[in-house]
Figure 1 (cartoon, rainbow, N blue to C red):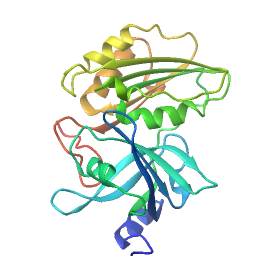
Figure 2: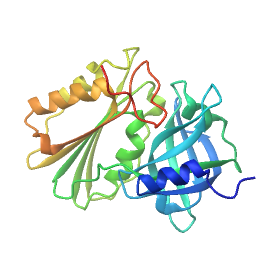
Figure 3: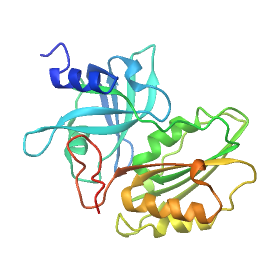
Figure 4: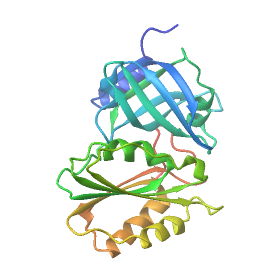
Length: 255
């Protein structure tokens, strides 16, 4: 068995000013209808801070190695473990790996990646997206300085995926889960309705928009219409409907 990450992972990490390590699967567990938790053992520093993600080197259906990026749900430094929540409702290299992973399997991990971190100056935090963003949303919210306020508006395919998390007693939490009900994955109607049902708090807030490419664009416009400035919005397209992400793990940006 390999004892170190593939040279391509090491070279990639050097170019990205990140780190690469060979991780071992500790467990792979379904959490809901389309959410899967994978716990990995390796260098926990690769998990970075709340808001960061990691790149996994996985095989696609054609037998090629590609990279897939996933937000880190939790870092357990004493145990040297990373926890990932991976959506498996879409066919792809990452979801296939997550559902078939077994304890003892090895995988290359590069990280930390990502530039969107918690806005420490905000008085309240609005997290808007789909199930692919839950891991990042919850990890970021658990880092909010108390007392604080966190609002979650999340669309899920199935209410079994409406997972919750534990937060400090002094964190005010509002959670709105919207069921997709057969709408197209690039249809923003569900999240727009969820947003319309909620009155934004007073004070300075920050919005974090993570999810499908077209839907996140629509949410940017909607929140701008609600008075949030460009500086108050951080957005990241995790994926794009009806199209696999590119080999580097990012969705194609062309229209």
